[in-house]
Length: 479
Image (tube, rainbow, N blue to C red; front, side, top):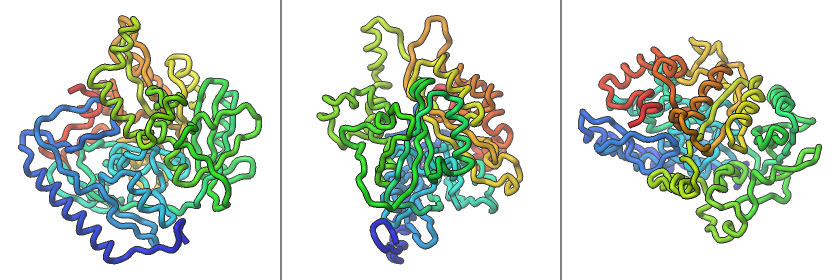
């Protein structure tokens, strides 16, 4: 039984979906052939969830306009075939009527499935379901050589399958992904557990991951927020079909403020599964406060359809283009701001150490916490680190720590001083950093952290003429 009743996949809809997809692939290939051979190949898209500078390229881009839809959902097999540029908002809208969702749904609606796989993604199921690329069964990739290749875990192109995550479009672009789905209940019962000590939070989080429960209740979802060293929370979610009242954080109430409390007992709440999945999107976690959207007087006047991450991103893009924030700071006599928008992972046993260092050194709060463990059995891969471009260890628990704001620059310090300090600390703690934002590594350190010779071999095999930028150029070098 699905959330909306019995449902099945109609053969006609299945064929129609694949026919439309094939037409989209044909347009993509035609656009590839139209790009001059001397020009770098890139996507022709106006939006992005990247926070680093994108290289300017006067050549036309790849036409991905026909690769934005769910091709088909198979509720019996619990799988979906999805075009690479499909957003998770559209993907969830297609699967949820069957009572199904992807195993990991990143927090923001306009993140695409292809983007989450080639650039990584994470959410509150990652402590049990890993990262989005681990639930991919097969993937069609337009390589830099202009070929559409189907890669699977154990097939001829298994090297591309395992090397694609964290390649950020430097080996190719996904045109179709077949993914696993999981069943969900209509509601999520929440418990917000407060901590006054970061190390106690760390210990409790590790125990929840080991037990998959807390205080006798099952835990299906797990993330957390740090406001200060003396005020932090774990957010525990349990799927349920029990009817009852639910909260709504798409209106005047703000989700992250709802978790705060002073009680020794957990604060309880309930959301529909749909609203739980998108609980962070309405206010872009807490970043909407930069636009005044959390001020009740402003919030009442702010159209509800514009309370979403994709609209805030447009405002950020305007700020980057016209230096609005720095101009306003200059009028106040303040120095320019350094953007510190990052997600990093450290082993769970180093979580409190990193967070305390961050609170002491970088004036940004709140901080998001999201634990993760790879799904892969280390014995199933030739290498003990089965995803070579982002080499997390199987069997080891990490915690993603996200922080998204800006800090004042200081005279005499190098460009990106705060980001450089974070990179150094993360490496010191045997952690990793996502590459969607600013990075400052030198080439040797970058190669050591993100694939090294293995990446070079993949690049030479699947993009022999280097039609695509290489990973270091794309993630670090300024263009």
